[in-house]
Amino acid sequence: MPSLPPAPMDWRVLLVDDEEGIRKVMRITLEDAGYQVETAADGAGGLSRCESFAPQILITDIRMPVMDGLELLAAVKQRQPEIEVIVMTAFGEMDLAIRALQLDASDFITKPLHDEAFFLALQRARDRFRARQQVQDYTTLLEAGWARTARELIDTFAFQRNLIDGSLDGILGCDRDDAVVIFNRSLERMLGYTRAQAVGQMTLAGLFHPGEDARFRRALAAEKWGGRGRLALFETALMAKDGQSIPVQASAAILPQPGAMGGLVCFFRDLREVRRLEQEVADQARILHQDKMMSLGRLAASVVHEINNPLAGILNYTRLMLRILKRGPLEATRQADFSRYLALVESETDRCARIVASLLAFSRKSPPAMTELALHDLLNRCALMSRHKLELQKIQLELVIADALPPVRGDANQLQQCIINLIFNAIDAMPEGGSLRLEADRSPCGREVTITVTDTGAGIPTADLPHIFEPFFTTKAEGYGVGLGLSTVFGIMQRHGGTVTAENVAGNGAAFTLHLPLAPAGTSPPER
Ligand SMILES: Nc1ncnc2c1ncn2[C@@H]1O[C@H](COP(=O)(O)OP(=O)(O)OP(=O)(O)O)[C@@H](O)[C@H]1O
Ligand SMILES: [Mg+2]
Image (cartoon, helix red, strand yellow):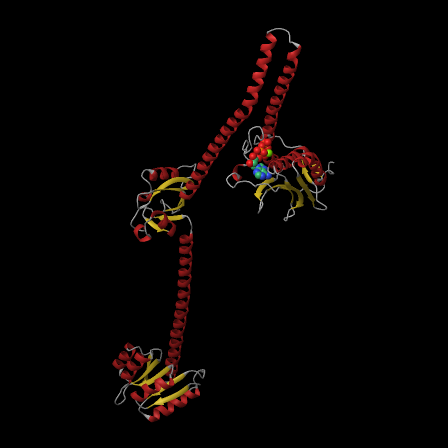
């Protein structure tokens, strides 16, 4: 026998033949060629060896007793279709060979064996086995690839769906025929339709407030809203399922599709909240305006009232003096009366002037003359100016000025006026005497200094607290208070970038605090 081409040891061949001589010869031939070989003497034995040995190639005789080669072939192909089967026929049994090929045998060889035909059949069986294996590997690979692609597609789809559903804006997609194909959660919330009710069931036109669809289409076709086929920040209205009109800001784009008009994607921003806030702001502005007009009215009425009395007095005395003068030259006895009248005119005019000056201080728009001030000097000056009044009313003054207070920037006269107003109020609050504490310190936050005037009077009734800074609010008897002291303080503090606060002291008395921002470092030296 000529030598067979070398075959790797991992090729296993099962040989089934009822003739022992043939089995022996063929085993030697095959093993010589490098195959692992097992044999069986009949079909049933061959079938069970196929399972245990798992050959890649099965060579079987056709004519065998009990289970013939064709039966074995059919059974093997059913259980282990990957096994390549070569059948052996006797010369002239062509019909059996054809039957074997129909049963998916790889080849047939005729007995007595012709070596070359045998090697060729083996080679072809190996090629077929390998080819089949490759196809299978490739299929497995394709399947794995397909599964991965499918997974990626599912992920991408899920991501896009989340993106669309997560949007606060309503997102709507429709096809070329205007039918809704995308309807996100925000739209569900905004309009009250479910996705199932909208997708494939409704058209874009059906979602608009009547008449708005045509306006939207015109704007989409026009140049001015972001170009033809595009729409940006266009205000329109949709209609909810319950018939409610929903104001929205729409942005839209026609999706490009070659040769034809494509579908449309629209983004709708719900404007109801914006409208509500706009309304609120408008209402507030209206209320503020009304409030301002009322305050102005009250202010005018108070001014009239406050100035009317002194003016009436001045007018009366002036008329009286004119009448006297008309009667003839002024008699010596009348001169004293005249002096008294004129003094009254002077004091009443002075009162008017003070009211006007205080009002001006309250409402002055021009900025104060700011310089850097040492609080120590300022407070001492105020204490000195009130000393006489304090002594008269038997009030103890306690002056507490923190060490190393930083300077503040301010108008010295105006700040002095503030402190004096607070001191005079405190004096008025203690007709029976008491003690007054004038204190200056740095605030806990360190960005401002505080000047506090605390008294031991009756305190401020809670109902009065919201009004004490209003011009002309006074609880004092006519001729004792005009009600301009604290409003003047308020106005001055505002112009200094500071504030004034009032509170009642536990026990008794009231405390008023001026909060003044610190002078920025490196400004002019303190004024004395
Ligand atoms: N230290 C205080 N204790 C109790 N009540 C006070 C004190 N300071 C102010 N008030 C209340 O606030 C009101 C308004 O004070 P404000 O200084 O503006 O006006 P006024 O003192 O009444 O009059 P004016 O200061 O114009 O002479 C006072 O009438 C008083 O009722
Ligand atoms: Mg006062």
